[in-house]
Length: 182
Image (cartoon, rainbow, N blue to C red; front, side, top):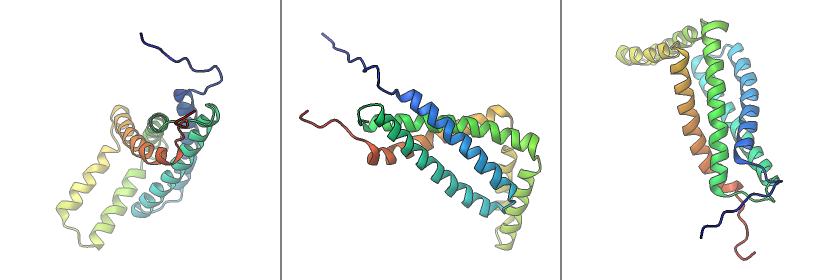
């Protein structure tokens, strides 16, 4: 005979925490990303700053989400639950940031991609990169001007990969299982 456990009414759900904090970090990131795009950094500086800022926002958001989940679940969260919460958060972030990026590139500042490409070409030419490599790299910028569907697939894929990787790493430190002999 199979037994099933029913969660107590005061327990917090994985999906609700993942969605809530996914929307929270998405909104924070939209503000940060918009401001970074307005500063007019070169492509290399922009890439480094965006990477570091997104990593900081995501780590803080995931830790807060894990803390909220544990608070609503008697201080407990398994490793797997932490990974699932993080995955949901990053999928939400991937979706929201993809829609924002599409709107930004197509309606708010259509010249943004061209400026980034021109900065990259200038940088590569200064560093004596062969023209074939420059052409290969600049072709990727045209993908940024693609349709909404392509942008969403790219964002959701990136969100899923980031969610799994961050979830695996952060959950090692934030998990708290029930004591073995309780």
